[in-house]
Image 1 (cartoon, rainbow, N blue to C red):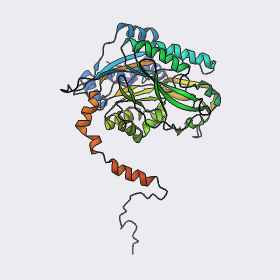
Image 2 (tube, rainbow, N blue to C red):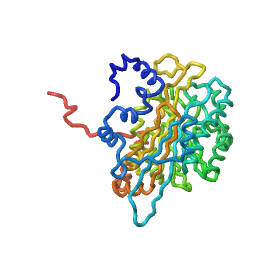
Image 3 (cartoon, one colour):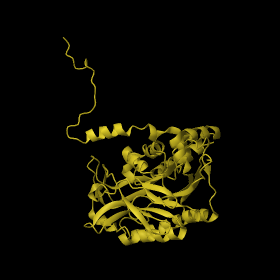
Image 4 (cartoon, helix red, strand yellow):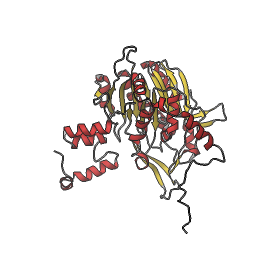
Length: 417
């Protein structure tokens, strides 16, 4: 039985829990899932999990047993390692299309005051054991977090952080290419891109590496936030690559980078282009977005009948010079806590428990891509959508003389006699 709050205060545990909360835990627990599991009776926890995480084909997600080598890497390097399986109904005319997908979340390795090259190389060194664990586990498609090769410095508006930007075929891509070849794995690598062919313009870009180590293509972030500290247009502007879907050896994938998850039409466009898995590599802090985090990507998976992988970095990144964000707060040296909590969602509304709120982590999932079509057939969202009505409205909305379709009660503005 868990201690009551009063007992914790008396025993001195309360202060430890508050400290843990400041460090990124929830009352001392890695995640909401672990908190509920530890404090609810099993039959109650099972029902709460059904409501919060959904059922896949009528039952809770099954855990996957991973190779001992992957578990050993998790223990040695102290990262969260979880694995689950999404299944689909057996079909008579199609074989199962099971793909093993991995998501990696991580904190930076050195203080932001360290030499830039040291910071970058230290992140490479930190990520390699996690990618090795993914490779040892047979992951087919792996996605890293937004701008994984640097601190998320886009709050500071100091242009020196642009030094981390590199060409699509630069050092970070080469590091990932070698591992993609080694493990026969597709890797989505979000970087800060320097476009050397167009005036060294900087973009927030995801590079898609094929399982042979080749560069399949790239996608640039469509939506740029201007919210509090996240005024990223100091560094890069809205992308110009549209909504590409990349056909890989393991399925059709797309990348909806960070802030794009707040835009339903962005999710829709990737679905219209045929995506089966959409990755959402992100960097977001608890005070700003945590209530939205478990909802938006999961809703997109349901509405568009595809799988979604949501990745958020972890830790608090402190910068040498204080900055303000124009929102009335005093100057500060950090964004806040990046709360991790990466997870995977399926088109049937089921989702995995999330990774830790404060530890590096690797989340692995088997997913039968046949589930995408099965849910399209079941719900018929694409069939019942009225795209012609949306087109007419959007076409009118983009014109300067647009008037909203509002019908007022004729008595609303009638003068009383």
